[in-house]
Image 1 (cartoon, one colour):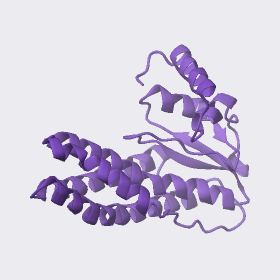
Image 2: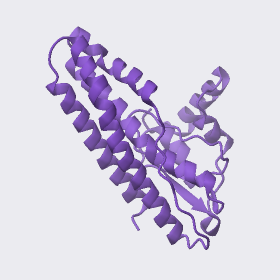
Image 3: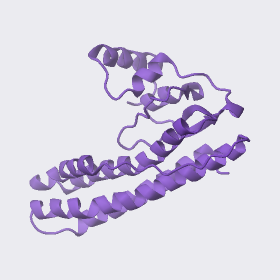
Image 4: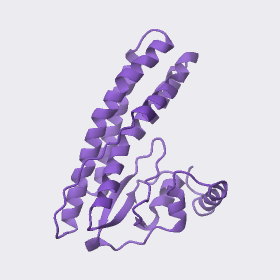
Length: 225
C-alpha cells in the first residue's frame, strides 16, 4: 500500500490539477468583472465537484489499504464523503473575484487557488475522519504533515492520535496535511493533548486564542506561521 506520505503527495497532485483547471477558466474569461465573476460561479463548482470525488476516492482506497495493513480481522467498506458546500463555495468564489474589480488579476488567481485547494482537499480528510467514526475497529486518526507551519507541526506532534469522535481536522489555505486512520491492532501512539484539541476547534474563545498563540510562539518559534 502507499505510505501515508505517498498518499498525501497524491492528494497534492489532485489539488494542484484542480487549481490549474480553475485558474485556466479564470484566465480565459473575458468581459466586465461582473461577467468574469459569473464565469467562476458557473464553472468552478463543477471543477471542485469533479476533483472532490477523486480526492474522496483516494482517501477511501487509502483507508481500506491501511486497514488491511493493520490486519484488522473484521470487514468494513469505507464510503466516499463529499459534503454539499454549494452555498459556502459560491460565497468563497465571489470573494476570490473581488480583485478583478480593481484590475488585480494575480490577486484573484491567488484567492481562487486558495479556495479550490482547500475545498478539494476537504473530502479526503472528511472521508478518513467520517469512516473512522463508523468503523468499530478504529480508535481515531492522526495527522500526516510534511512539516510546514508551526500550527500544523503542533497538531501532528508525536503522531498524536485524535480519539474523540468529535475531533475536527483543522486546515488552513494551502494546507497539504492529511489524516491516517488508527486501529485497535496498531494503536501505539499518544493521545492528542488538550492543546491539540483546542487548536482543532472551529471556534475558540479569545482566551483560548491567546493561549494557543503563546504556546506556538514558545514551543515552535523556529517555524513559520
